[in-house]
Amino acid sequence: MWLYPVSMRFFTVERTLPHGHVAAVLGAARGSGAASWFGSAPQELQPVLLAMLVARVIAPASKLATHRLLHDDTASSSLGRVLGVGQCSADDLYRALDWLHDAQPVIERRLARQHLAGSTLVLYDLTSTWMTGRCCERGHSRDGKRDDPQIVFGLLCSSEGCPIAVEVFKGNTADPATVAAQVSKLKDRFGIEHLAWVGDRGMLTSARIEQVLKPAGMDWVSSLRAPQIAQLADEHGPFQPTLFDERNLLELTSAHFPGERLVVCRNPLLAEERTRKRLELLAATEVDLDKIAAATQRARHPLRGEDAIGLRVGRVIGRFHMAKHFELVITPMSLTYRRKLDAIQAEAALDGLYVIRTSVPATKLDAGATVAAYKSLAHVERAFRCMKTIDLHVRPVFHYAEQRVRAHVFLCMLAYYVEWHMRSV
Image (cartoon, rainbow, N blue to C red; front, side):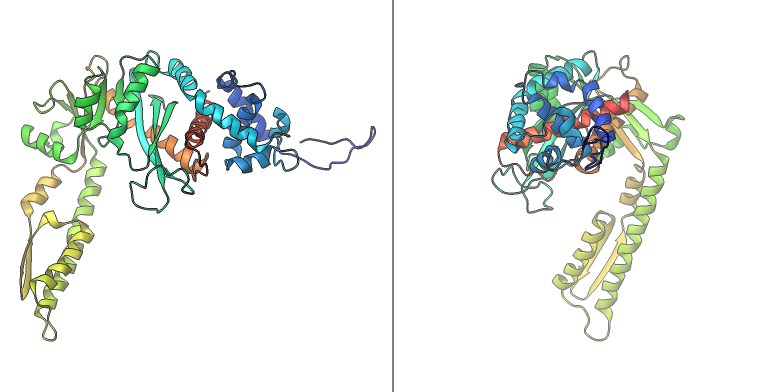
């Protein structure tokens, strides 16, 4: 609490500014090395950069709102007064953001030396967020959920979840297309020749492994898609529960994945859930198909015509995604169907199974550690939740200039680093 003196003997509280949370986050930022990040900035911008970083943690908002939070006349905390930036202008914040954009490679290199040196793994994933306005359009939503333009950004983390680097891409960029840029960044900018990349099956596809990771001399930990798991089951025979040990892990190799280790994992609870859901969807589909079949046989105004019947059937099949499990016979005057029991049983045999693929030898990463490495992608998902919704609110992005959009996302990453550091100490 700040007190403003009125006379030498008596004091009247004219205004109070919350300070405790400012002291805690500012101390964490300094302890995590933030002062060294901004050490090469112009002297007048260094406290502004630190203030923007702390403000992103305690009160994430637009830069204009952050300026109001810092300015002496409109401050809502002691942050501006503590750092001596209570009279800064909004232009100072934008100048600081421009400097941060130029300094991003240097700061990321520092973080990589600190947290990736001697490591075996690096985590990588991609997410999207939406922007406001059209002056800096960065591509449209890859999910098609909003009319606003979107960006996507890829986040590199250490195996413990420490954020190392972030890069912004156009909003319609596919996940695998970003891998090559990150591999180049790791080798060229950070000087790291070899690491094992951990990414999900949509990121580290077979094509990206062959075209990017192998030529770069990198290892990988990823997983197989459902058709590949089915192919593996055909190659090795049905994966019976008795094949798995008490850890529910089974390690094998395949001619389709030369030089790789495959770890088949079984989750009994997930198997039960998928079985239950499939049976419910099959039953729900049959209820609606029975209604259509009855409509073709009713006495008054029966449903007639292959097109009309097929249209209604298509809506039902599309709603429940069960087309692969039914054999349909549509005539101009009737509908009949039956379950494809063989297809249903084949799918049920794979319930609860997922397969981790890796090129890392067992001497460096055994089966259990391989599975744990893949599951560590949850660290990146946690970072995305924190940056996008829970704490740091990277979205919506209000900036018009492309370099400021990139700097804004980088500032949010540094703010998450401060939070990660607070949890780790």
